[in-house]
Length: 129
Image 1 (cartoon, rainbow, N blue to C red):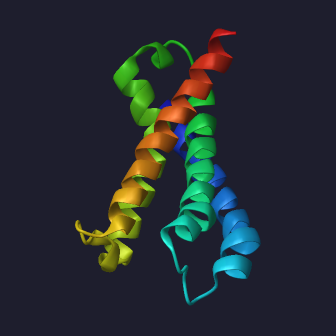
Image 2: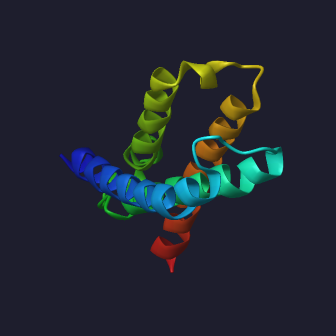
């Protein structure tokens, strides 16, 4: 039951932050035509997504209670399952991103891994202090 609570918190935070990111950054600045350069994609798509993944991972990790949070694998699953599931959902809904030679797949993978790592690091820093 503790994992379900962590995942529920992660889902809520991810959905809310992605909604804010889409309405404040993506739709007004990127629009349906997309971005023209790698730098614009990084600044307007990938970095805001990184913030969303960090916040979702951190929120899910924060509600993971003792004594289970001391089990590294269980804590990793509690904190990172929602962003990983969202990545799998994205890949199934947008097969064009699945092109392993394309930058979009690799950037989204880096955002997922980096966001989960930073979210867990933030949790560890806040938890120990």
